Length: 96
Image (cartoon, rainbow, N blue to C red; front, side, top):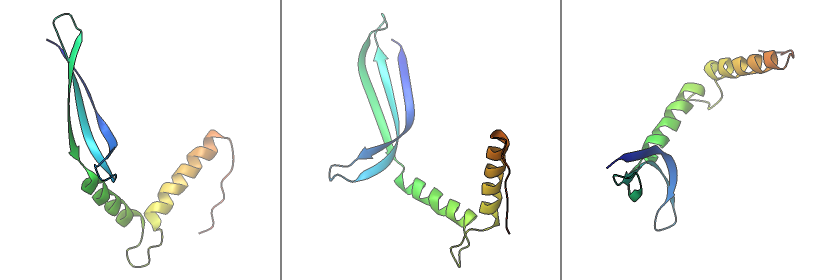
């Protein structure tokens, strides 16, 4: 018997219709000839983990008192703009 597996994060729906994020694993169970005879799936609700990640990301890129973007976000976006301008052979202007 062989097993093939897929793992990933998907958005799933609860019975009440609400969406939630889940880390999912689906295994295909095959017989000796390699024919799939069954699937076994398992999932874990990771909505709270994603929400926590978003909060940490916001703390990293925005001032906690004012909610305005901080220098880390400026540096990130400036780097993205410079790489894009380099690819497209364009110039970038910055006012700080």
